[in-house]
Image (cartoon, rainbow, N blue to C red; front, side, top):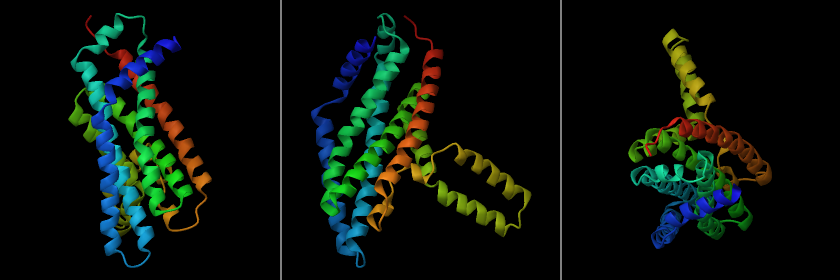
Length: 259
């Protein structure tokens, strides 16, 4: 059973790996270094810390979007070329396809963060680079699982990518949104409408990961316990990953494919 899952993982992974993937990864790494060189000319105070933080954020969003596009395109092609129908004729369970895709996402994210370790280490300490690469792997892995869920549910690449990125950005901006809502309620003297909106958004944000669940930029500006920060993110990623995989399995099993 597990041998079949591994075999399916290798098959799916071969469909993703290509020279184009390698080239695009190298291009993103070079662009990150160019961005760092540009901002190093502009920054005056704490220039090195500001540059490495900007480079890290550039890599965060660029690699996240890149991984999301690769994952959604891969699953979408399985719909387009009726790969699911072929799998159902084989002695493979649907959970094995989901498990194989999870392994693909984990491997793809590992490949994408390897240049991050090198680039961040050039601007900062190698230990900070190792932390950022590990934390970014957890972050992109979670985003990839969200992308897998949305493409299986929506079956359209643009919708899946937009919804996943919107959810991801909402989680990233959860702290700022909470502060804005609190200030809005205070300025409106606690009106019913403001409190209702605050309640709705608070309920939505409660279901999303908080800022501690993502790679922390504070490591570039001060002494931060890297192990503790990474352990918090690891715990949060495990919880949300299990939830996303469970929802994905439920949604995938309820679908009907014509043989």
